[in-house]
Amino acid sequence: MDHLKHYTALADNLASTNPQAHETLEEEINILIHKLKFIPMESRPVVLIQNLSTSQIEPDYLEEILAVAGGRKAGLENDLAEIDILIFIQESPDFLSKLPTLLSTQYQGSKAVENNQVYIIQKPAFGSQRSDYLQDIEILAEIVQSKYFIYGHEGNHWMKFEL
Image (cartoon, rainbow, N blue to C red):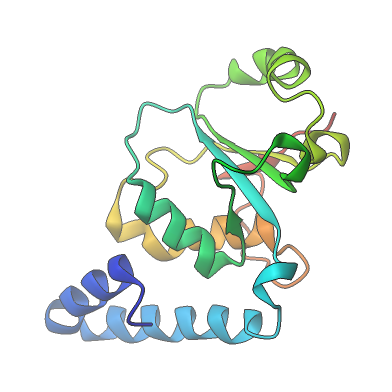
């Protein structure tokens, strides 16, 4: 887990300030990593995350939590036809009325849209509060690896957009 920069910083802080929280974090992250170690990287879904919220999210933080959750970040070289899952981060309820137009224009031809794999994360400040590191990973894991993880965040912090 040395390659997990944000996890390491949070774990180091918790180890000295709140050992019980540190133990819980370490245990939960180890469970996630262990469950996913049998899924080869090339078999993990390619995920495009669009942050349309007002919260600023560090790209390397988002990449780290996505990797722990079992996804692969879509790179610049990926075209829409290669995107398995499309996730929008947007807390505004009126975004739902704008999404069909967005999908039929900007994301038309996307594998994610064609396969009905479009999700909206509605959790306020998603990805911007380090204290929510584990919860942010749980949200992504429920979306990206839904066969393996159920934490109860669906309907509260994220939803599937049915086309």
